[in-house]
Image 1 (cartoon, rainbow, N blue to C red):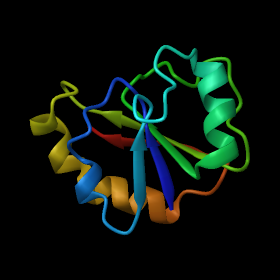
Image 2 (image 1 turned 90 degrees about the horizontal axis):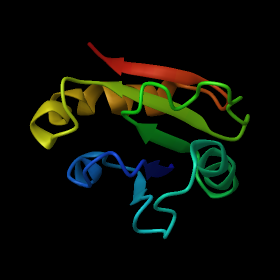
Image 3 (image 1 turned 135 degrees about the horizontal axis):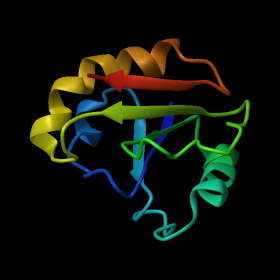
Image 4 (image 1 turned 30 degrees about the vertical axis):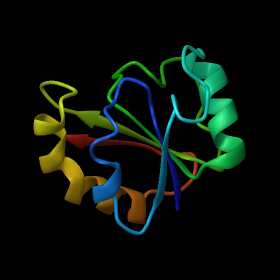
Length: 105
């Protein structure tokens, strides 16, 4: 699955998301793009968008071609996010397009 990491996330967990092609917003040149536009752009190329921004989806409908996974963690540091990797992988496997899934505490 093609997965996009929001710019508020470190790139660190990407290699641990085995079986998925993972890019960051920065890598694809979309830094600074507003959430609504980022969701639209991501839906054209990716099957999942992962963020830690708890308000990312507010006022936006998630397109049916993409899953939005919101991480719930104390910080966006890799030490806080690494324990969530198994749950992230499960969410990627089970979530359907158009769904918003929260992973974490």
